[in-house]
Length: 112
Length: 211
Image (tube, rainbow over all chains, first blue to last red; front, side, top):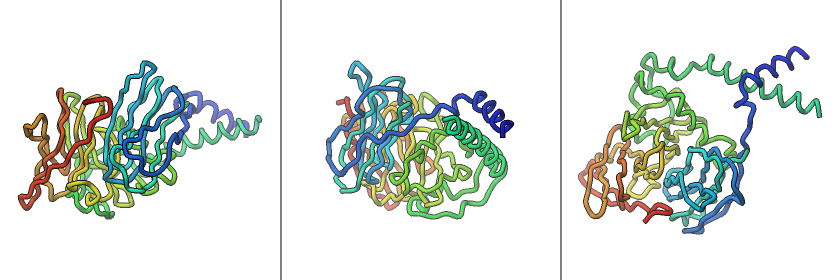
């Protein structure tokens, strides 16, 4: 057993990125709300921001820095709409552009 | 507490070992592409309407390791991502090669549910083109370091043009995909031409924070 623990420790230390976990945060969920903007409560490092939604309807996801500037904007009518670029310190946003489908949407990002 | 820490460490270790073992058993993307393979036995509306996914694989169809970000589609998505199914990375196909100022590639990856996901110029999934205005998937914005408009198209769409300030400019159209890199003004619409000669104009929504 001790040998396994030592082996596991060696692996974890050799691959620190694998050991550091980002958790997925659902920051908004609901229906409809065209032109609605939804955001996280605060700023932190982000790995991605995405929204699952009705296919064929357009959504935007992006980040906002501490100066109020938007960056990393991605707009898509595929499901999900995703921005895979990460952000060192940002608020994550999703925007319903024209989804009045009555299909539930789920906005998610990551936090350390 | 010690037991919890030990369990966590072991879980992390086994997960890493498991990934390594999985790669050995199923073959890496590079090895999967080293020889031509039969089209995958999957089906779904989007998959069935993309001829590019039904040709035998070639050496450059393998998903580059830097495009592993496609896994973000299903990472801890639970119920919200259940429609996607399991990504079949070994069945990826390159749709566009070396496009735009970043010379990016645009890849399609089918899933075992017949959904077609994409990566290289942003990521996402299309399951049924009939759900899209004009049957055209539209994605745009800051993707892979470029300001682009791009998407997947079914076999019956033969041409795509972008409308900018009232003038019509051709997009690159290949292998069930289109691409246009934006310089300055954002396009306001796409014009799709279909196999039967019909045309349809599809509006592009305004990008947040831009006019």
